[in-house]
Image 1 (cartoon, rainbow, N blue to C red):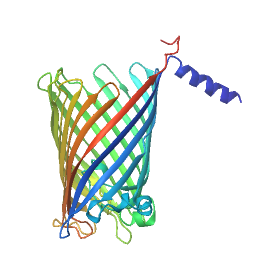
Image 2 (cartoon, rainbow, N blue to C red; image 1 turned 180 degrees about the vertical axis):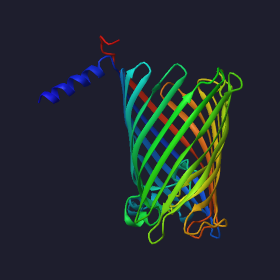
Image 3 (tube, rainbow, N blue to C red; image 1 turned 180 degrees about the horizontal axis):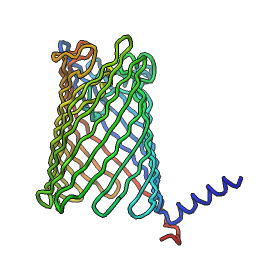
Image 4 (cartoon, helix red, strand yellow; image 1 turned 90 degrees about the horizontal axis):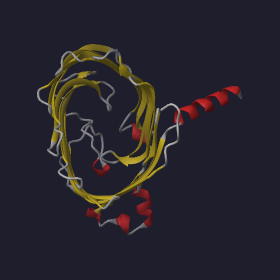
Length: 408
């Protein structure tokens, strides 16, 4: 009883002086997508989807955020005459619900040190590309699967000196198919991840960072994969708006599959990038290319990934916003039962968005996207998909008065 009272008193002390906000959003959209598998006739699908969102935020010495935003999605097979809109049994069979939630609790221990916990998860039936989901990763299927994702991370970040800062986080994750039929397409993996970085402001325009990352995954029905990566990253501020970055290092990788001896192999890591962020209404952009080992979420082995990503954002006024982002990646088995150079996969993704604010509580937007996958792996399919949709978002925010606090 005494411990419960002490915990309650501590929480009251952290919440004192907190600004509470309640947010409610609803995003609805309708559009069309066209999907073409290599060697098969193309299909045209209509889409109707809605994403309600309810979030609670509290900011003070302790920052707390909790949100729930399920995605409700209905694919409409226009090529077959849209039976989803004419027959109730077809509607109930093809409607998809993906439950999603996230949580953040962050405590400011002192002006230069903060610690916290964040978690997010998703569960439900979904098409991995439904709604134009941004995913320049390997796509095993465009059919529906029962999907599961969960992650919990504890983190600590702060300043060690006036010119040195650090960050560290450790967490566990689960992702993949939630039942046996889905796991046959997208294996379930459970794992641990540790990420840390030590940054030093070497000069007024230059900084050095020592990043370290370790990831381990265990797959269902069997198999393990892991890598440890370290290196050095240099960032140079060429002008007030233009920043350049270069990084290089190495990784140790490990893979073990059922009935196959474990394999260990060193891998390279490198990155080059630039970003431009002016202080006025001019466009901001970021461009980066990376070479890194990644865990193949389909085979449970290690791939070497060469990727290119670009993004552009322009907000010429308070009402208008334009965004675009694109990505391309080439993946090749690095350690596997057959690390063959002819088993490569290339993936591409592009999103273009424009939105206009209407009044004080709504936006109207248009989105165009494209996805493509080209592969020589027999277990994967080559396809191209493109489409677009019109979306309307309504939002509201309720803010409570801040409570008085002696800590401020």
